[in-house]
Amino acid sequence: MEFIELTLGSHIIVHGYDNDNKEITEHITLDGFSKKVVAVSRIKSVSEKYILTDYIDGRWIYWEYEEAFEDLKKTLV
Image (cartoon, rainbow, N blue to C red; front, side, top):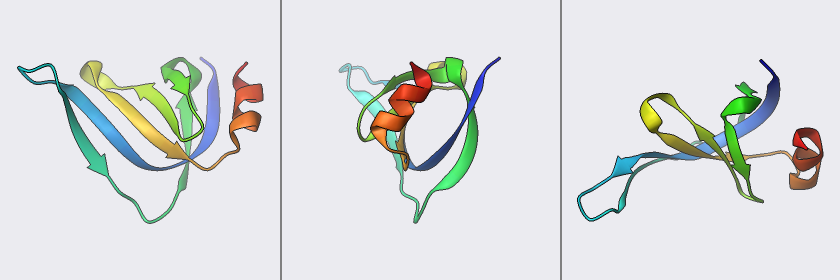
């Protein structure tokens, strides 16, 4: 399994959908960033603001990250 070190901060956890098909989200606001090692296979997409990862039981997590988008893109491609 391949891993990448990322500097991640505040995040949004998507727990699923309600009866009206609206996302059930939990916003976690942190004061800073911390380094984490993440399996590359868990990364589903990267935007200029968020890295989307999957998690246990079908949940999704949108992480804010500190790395430069272009550098991260080069590492993953």
